[in-house]
Image (cartoon, rainbow, N blue to C red; front, side, top):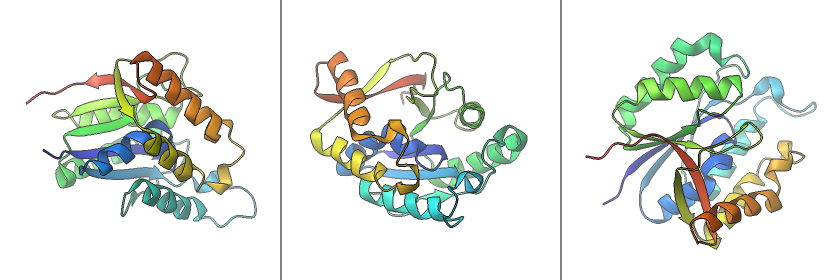
Length: 207
């Protein structure tokens, strides 16, 4: 039976980094996957680029993974704590319209202020859903690998191609194919598979 899944990305590219392989796998298996980015980070756009460049890049990246139309919002990057109530209201609206069974969001170990706000408000908004926190080692001091989703070569390849769509972010070491593949192999080794993505179990709901 197909599931309805929501991926919550604080900024464009977070969702692909945290669970891009999982998105590719779930879509390949016929599930309904929705992707929302709460900020297109216009203040962080490299000099000389148009202010909407990240919106264009996220549309290309999510299309590679199989998502037809990402949902994009314009909360100000690095200022999410100031907009906590508006973000919660937005997440509740998404819950009511999409009705997901599984939600992917930043983990409780994420130190970025925007990511922490999304973790906290996701927990408040999606009380009836399974919530899995995705891994972003550059923001995590530690991480609880409590859930694993096994992936195949084609899922990792799609994740790498999707992240390559972010030309404005090409100098970020965590977007390199070697890092992406290496982390997936590390997590796969933990479950005796070639590749996997690991998640923190924030809430597990069985109906």
